[in-house]
Length: 491
Image 1 (cartoon, rainbow, N blue to C red):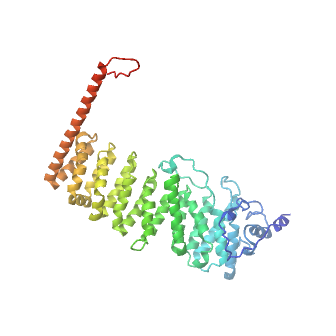
Image 2 (cartoon, rainbow, N blue to C red; image 1 turned 30 degrees about the vertical axis):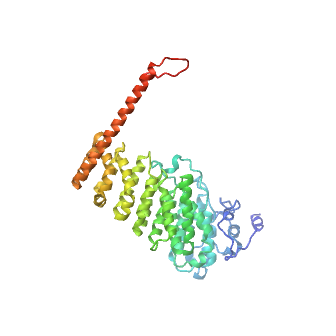
Image 3 (cartoon, rainbow, N blue to C red; image 1 turned 135 degrees about the horizontal axis):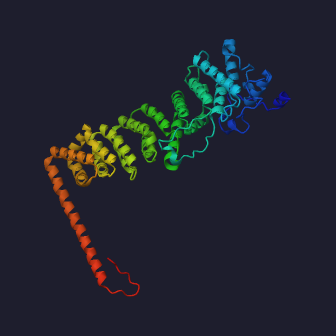
């Protein structure tokens, strides 16, 4: 009865050179074998013919090799090993439900052992992969890896460091599939010209969707695989960059929720290293429209290290971009998030360490106005981080050469700290910086001090005048008689 049912299943032959995409929704339709049925199980009483019929239901008839998939590679002649490879891949297209550990234990173990065999076979690298083998492997990866993640109900988009990572229960199989795909792409036996027909834009797009996995182990595997794809398939490089850019755009301007931003930035860090000089306009646009706006989301702490590395790569390649980046930082400077302010100040110091004098002079006025605000911050860590900039010799040298402009901007903030800041450590640091400016240019320091005192006197006088004017208004209002519904000021 089982053979009669399986014999009625459609067996469409799919040519390897077909232009039709195999990784779209059709590859994972409702008819695809996502859960192992009794007829699909790779072990446990089913006949060889039934197994072959089952694999035919998964793969096109032309793809099934006719080999018993449980036969070890060592028991088959070299000329037939590639057919056995395809047969084992078709067996691994069956997926299981890992939510119940006690379900299909024997079948899961058979699939795991088969995946281990496939990984070892690919790692040996003794035979060139045929086109049917490439298609079979890509389809097996599609069946196992390409899936929809459940909604993320965590609040805040994952920026809370206290959130423990969520691990996929199917990882024992997923890890082996990822390892197999990585070794396959890295293999010298893979012809990139043939493989690019199957590792195409649709396949890469589905891989990129998996970066939103909450399992950090899966994101690490994806990162390594995308690195290899970018390096091996030069024809796909523009598409990969564009697709990652779109993920960044959606994250910054729409959702602010994505689990794999750090890993994608790490990939781009390696990509930026290979950019030729002078930088193309496309790459500069990526810096201004993608990397700089990535400072906006409140979850920047999760991926800041990778983001800062990418930014510094650009500045090291083209130093004149430093002023552009600093203007972007000032544009997205946080108003109420003290933790982000400390992060921004740290990145600012890194940039100022490598900036040249010309670029520094272009942005020093708005930059030190912002630093002055940070010096007066009531959050002592922000104030300390801003004052620590004067511990950097290169930054002090830049300030010394431009002290005629910088000291008048920064002096009011220093004086207010000395007079009224609540934190003793901040006050001590402020005294040290005042002493440094005094030794640097005593005449200028005294001039700024006198000017500040004059401005303070003017502001105090204006405040007294306002206070006196209000007193006169209150007195005049108190002398007027109460008539009807006229409002009267009661002191």
